[in-house]
Length: 437
Image 1 (cartoon, rainbow, N blue to C red):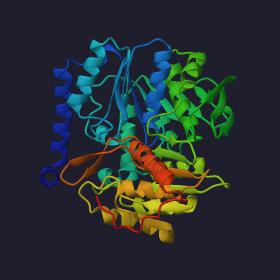
Image 2: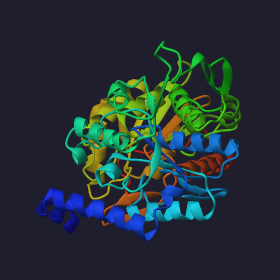
Image 3: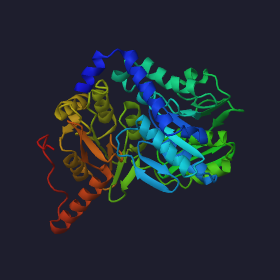
Image 4: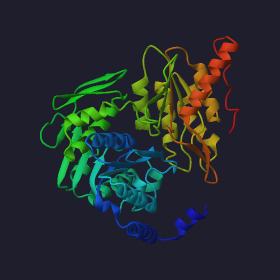
């Protein structure tokens, strides 16, 4: 509360000066480490973590020493550790320290997620980005930026600051804004645009299969184990970055075909007797893509979803509920990351969009358990909003340790044990929203 009050009292230009100076101070303290390697920044609304992961795989396959930082994890060469900060783009000193560690371990490349909030606070300043990649843009962080146009402008500022190489998703309706920004090299990637030639990476012969994806780039066939048509765009983004660094399509193919899944991104946690997926999707655009990928005519799609608190993008809560009701046979709305908001109020706002389909269960574990109880053989359960995040953020800056994937595994084991000692179709369903954290 004190922090928010101070923000209102201090003139915006002084806050900007503070952030800018802090970025300079952090870079100075760690001796400007980004000058000693190639730094690649991935920005956009959705897909950033996946592109970071796939790009790192490609450059490693090419024989380079890699550091990467995403909302999922930190990685320096063979060492990996989870990102428990709950910040996609960490603060200035943490960023510069990470880059210094990467240099000390002899890394040739660092691949970073770059967020609009990070750009707004000049966290990207005094990092020598040589490559900027744009995945896509959809309404997000509107309260923080004031409008979608200002949100887009933040992303564009990152491209203005990166002079060497720009990688752009030509299929996004905002692509022209990014393409117009000067750079020494531009690569556009596409599924939809018919244009071919130098500077265009296009996927042809696309097949979206239950087991993965097939497509070709310049007659080189790719077979990925990743699910969802949207992952073709993510793969093309990573391929484009690889090509910009002189990596061949053959190396890109070898790297991408080894990727079994991305943690918390369309990750299959349970395969039998029904399927359970966990995904990070928390925007309307991403959620719809996930549901479209998993929806079939032969079985039920059961979803568990919520929405973030802290006053973030309240407009999208009923929209998320509406999309869930449109695609899913059963809709369970639950707690996600309420921060300082009343969790049940958030749930009610999401449920308002889902209408009569919405079943409200405050306790996230019990919501997941209810979805598992409803599921029958060949059905699909999809749990969204958190992916592999390691905690639930509640009031008072407190965090409750959490992992959707582990909770699913634990509850499935309990159900299996229950059915062994008391054979029946399933235990009785949970009623309404009576359970609380």
